[in-house]
Length: 221
Image (cartoon, rainbow, N blue to C red; front, side, top):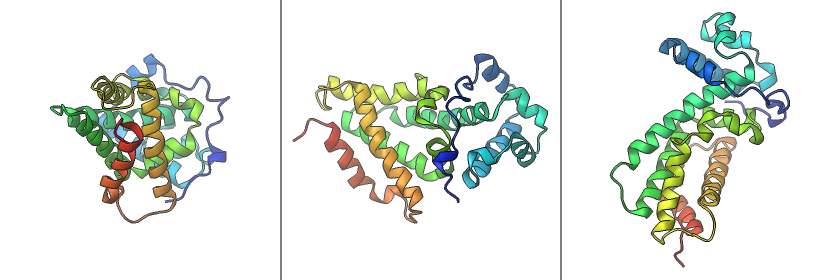
C-alpha cells in the first residue's frame, strides 16, 4: 500500500463548500447498497495508492463500474465524494462503539473498551485511516458529518464526562480536551504503525497502550 503525500491533499480553499448537503445525504440513502459498496472500495483503493490530485472522478467511476453521471449525481465533486465515503466508513465505528459500550458501567472499563474498539477498527481498516490522515486537511475534518454527529462524538464524550463525574478522570480540563488527548495519542500511534508498515497488530500491545492512555487521563497518581 502506497502512502499518499500530504502535499497532494484536498485544497482547503476549493473544499470549503464540499461538505455534503442534507439533500445529497438523503439522495445517497437511495443508492443501491451494492453500488455504494463498489464506490467505497474504489475510493479506498485509488486514494490509498495514488495522490489525491492524481485521481479523477472518471477513475472512480471506472473502478466502481458505475457511470460518471452517477458519481456527479450523488456527490458532485471529488472532495464531496471523499467526505461522504469517510462519513459512511466512520459511521460504522460509531455503531460498533455504541454496541460495545452497552452494559458496561465501570468508568475505567468503559474507557478501556473505547480504546480497544477504536484501535481494532483502525487496525483492520488502514486504508480508511490513510484517507483521513493524508487526503483531508485537519481544518476540513468538520466537513465529515460524523465528526459533528452525536453518535460518534457523543459516544466518546459520554465516556469522558462519565469518568469526570465519578472522579476518575481528570476534571480540571474539559471533556473535549480529554477527547483531544485520546485522539492525539491513538491517532499518532495508528498513523506511524501504518507508515512503518508494522507487521504486528496494534492490539498486540494493547494493555501497555491503554495503560499509557489511562495514566495520561486519570486522576490516579
